[in-house]
Length: 369
Image (cartoon, rainbow, N blue to C red; front, side, top):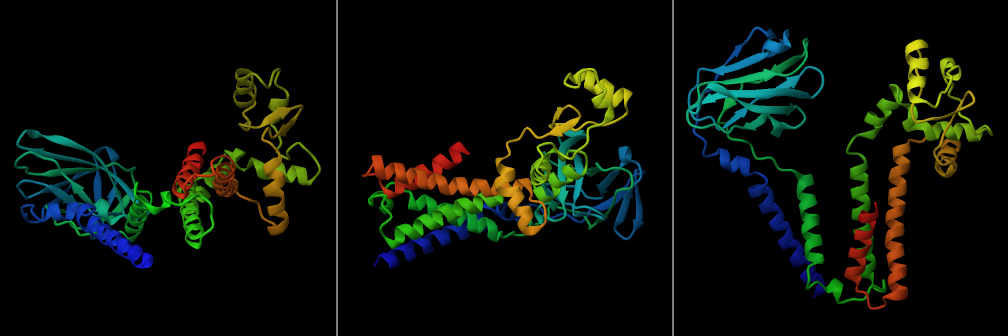
């Protein structure tokens, strides 16, 4: 009976998720159905843009890189502008147009067209009354080449179904239902003595771990941070340098300071250091390293290097990435948070409910993090 009730609840939540995805998250589709139909505009290229092939253009003067959409008149509601860069995925543009209240033209602001995100091709316009043209400024450097599909005005926006968004919404609704005031999770004590409690705890912690992994990859650290290490900011890889030093039985790093830093009258004075190394010595010194008597040291604690970086290198033969260690430690802290709250609850609050335990553990983890 309990299983059937749970299934009914999950089906209801799934139906709500589908309705939200189709109606709410795709409201631009339903809105655009009522837009007045207009013929396709003509594309007029200004002198800052040069046609180089069929539907292919190149910016030759970034100050005059304009495309004008003309030959159409009406109440402009949206714009379809599918711009595909020859290299990269992003095109920065500025949209301008006239309307009843702005005969001299109106700047509608900047937009970012991402070729990997089809929805970004559909730009909502907020104009008043009848318009006669749209002007698009390509905010890219000279030599930027791109392919352009035929622009359209007042086009019906396609319906975009995102399975990832549906999964996230479904899980959020399940969590809201699970922790609603009348939920059974508050009627049971926190003791993990039943299978459904164990499964619930594993799933709840699993959601936290998935969230950690997702957040840790938002800035694409394998590219962004690694690029900084490779291009003049090696401090993000300093733990690997410390691990290499400790492995050799030394505490100083192999990184060599510039000679001009050694010859500076006071290398710890910022102004003197800059003048001696950069201006007079025409050399470069590394930031965020400790300097002492002609050697660089790491002022970071050695524990991470000993616990993670050295074992990883000995086992795999490759260097460990700092951001991966941070992610791993965050996951371990998440597990420890649930364990800590459970131990405290068992010892001092024996009547604590299962639901409150889960919420307190989650609040503690995210709050301290």
